[in-house]
Amino acid sequence: MTAHTPTLQRPVPADTEQDCSAAPAAPRVRTVTLFRDHPLLLDSGRPVSNVRVAYHTYGQPRAQATLVTHALTGTSAVHEWWPALFGAGLALDPARDFIVCSNVLGGCAGSSGPLELDGAPLSLRDMVTVQRELLRALGVERVSVVGASMGGMQVYEWLRSYPDLVERAVIIGAPARHSPWATGLNAVARNAVRLAPGGEGLKIARQIAMLSYRSPDSFALTQSGESRTRPGTPAIATYLEYQGEKLQTRFCEHSYCALTEAMDRFALTDAELHAIRTPVLAVGISSDVLYPPQEVQAHAALLPNAEYWELPSPHGHDAFLMDAAELEPRVRAFLTAPR
Figure 1 (cartoon, rainbow, N blue to C red):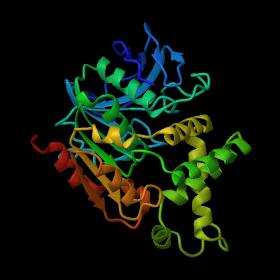
Figure 2 (figure 1 turned 90 degrees about the vertical axis):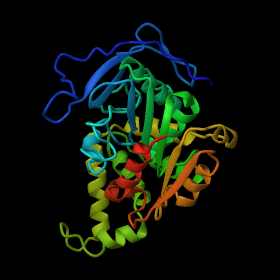
Figure 3 (figure 1 turned 60 degrees about the horizontal axis):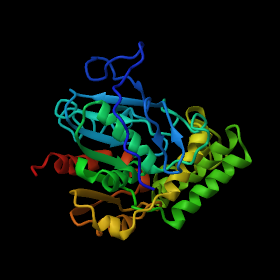
Figure 4 (figure 1 turned 45 degrees about the horizontal axis):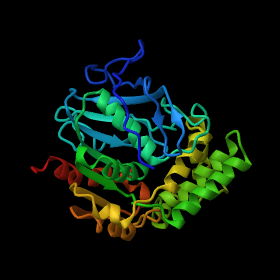
């Protein structure tokens, strides 16, 4: 279904929020309500009005921006979860660029969540349409888009939905369509949530996901032997329990199901990939078992103007976070190169 073109609404930040670009202290999230006068038509066909979006901006506002799209359980606070890429002289430099990141539609870090949307099925195109409207409200006319994992899939959607607005794109550890393997992992995780609602299922879902976010070599390096916190128990067991408990305290099971279902429905055809002319840097991760590098490379090969680079790491899919310092120079060179 063709995405509805949103109408312009200027941000109306809450009284208690501060300007992210001007404050000397750590940037703080802002919120805006979009689609007040005309509804957002979701891919499912359902109209939605008064969509709340939580977002961060960094640097001085301008018509050209760098949009960062976050991963499944991420937030709009790029400076917190990607510090190796964010800062003076780095790939995401607020002194050089106007940087924007918003919490996705259906998320649980300030934007309208699944229950507020009456459980309507969501797509990555819906999320990107909301991002486009936010950028319109901020006065942004052209973007470079950078994302990893689910964020990288959003970059693919930007290239499909708004190719004329994207100057260049960086896709890290992400496919152009979800494989049966990745979809199956998500289906099992959602089964856990539905069998044990209220938080316990979400803990198990996270433990399942963590096994695909890392690699056998990574766990051999970091979680071998006995737990230091619980003698007699394998370190990997207490590590996975800790990861599940940590996510349960900060994430919503309804968002988890809605967002993973949107990922599972995501698919660009070969013809759509061939039609994308935007310069793209596609990054595979050598030990990624969730989105193997050969899958990332094969999809990038269908793009007429893409270059592929592989991040060597033993840490699997999570290397885009764990080894971000090795990733940063390549991303910076691509984003700042003359065109």
